[in-house]
Length: 265
Image (cartoon, rainbow, N blue to C red):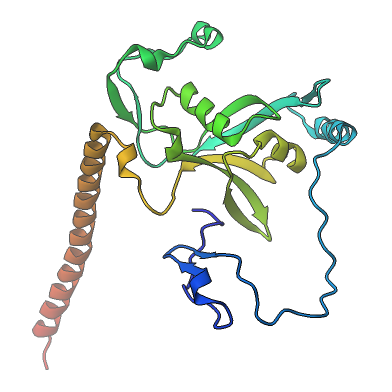
């Protein structure tokens, strides 16, 4: 699902030390591999270390952002150098989530008082969130990806482990749509400020955290049973589709055979 986790062939150059290369099915890890034949005349200039933007630079970026924002969702700079603003997150969850059973939707009072309705009952049920639903969040420049995920789950009263989910940035490059998984320590509002308010340039998407290996210990027994039920249903649907497809082929072949047998030689 992501650009980061590309498939690796599992091959390593013979010039590299084999004990310094580790291979998996999804990626290759290298441990401080040094070339045996370094270039002596390397004139490539060293990259300057990253430095945080100054308060004046942030103010200029926010002013430029607000002039382009047409939906009254501008950013506001505080005296301490932090700023607040809005981000929109698309929810693209293909698996069911666990929510409290028999709980009314949260009211404005609950939101203001930060009432945790999920903690009022131990009953749980599985639920499919609408595919590609959009949630708007008002966050600070210091709000991390981890906090955004937790806030989204709380708004939808999802009681699953936040580690099951990941936030991705959706960008366009060379006419292609690419997804890149964000680190839990990244700050989405800063990325929003750099990219500008155009969601076609940058948008955020919440998906399942595809790590390559499923951590089954993170799921409860009802969740695992629900997964088995879903898999059995998908299996039966697939079997019916295959049987229907080849049933039509059989019917056409039988008709062709009957027509050929009925024709004179």
